[in-house]
Image: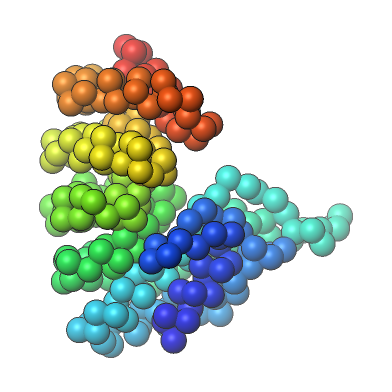
Length: 274
């Protein structure tokens, strides 16, 4: 059942699903948020959470559960109301539906379940990738999750452990870097915590290794460094010493696409600002 739900959610959230990957792209389907909204509204987060709690030793179930949480918590840039919108009959926007899904996953213990299962099954790269995706997406909008991320045994520590354990796995690196980017945004405490525990080196290594292999990892890695550098002098020095300036220049010299260009230019801007 969980595996089928993963397939259903992947079909709803992306136009291209990679072979063996978690999810490529994030494009909400349907006029009212597609399958994600339906699953969230009909008790999906609670059902998945209860299943994971009932069978903690079933690795495959935990893998699919973490991936379901990650897919349900997707973020996107649009805020379009449904096509059937009529004056006086306001319909829910995609961004509102996604926010509700993230809140429900968090409310039913999704964050702690992901942390527990990532710790229990550290060698399962697909589970680690799904967990990183979920933790990052929830942390991007749930204030309580972001505030608790920089704690011993918390979200940031688990993300860094996943990145260290699977340095050549494209999905773990993509979603791990993305999660660090989300959690570092507008949080001085998280920026400091990430940097002091080797986060700068992890992000630089991801960019360096995947520079010619996967643009999404590079974009997320540079984005994470960009947020770590913002208004944080100590982190700027660490990032400079790690060779991130040269990495950003190398990426930008290759005529990158818009997303990569924004991440690289953003990092250079933050490093140059006082």
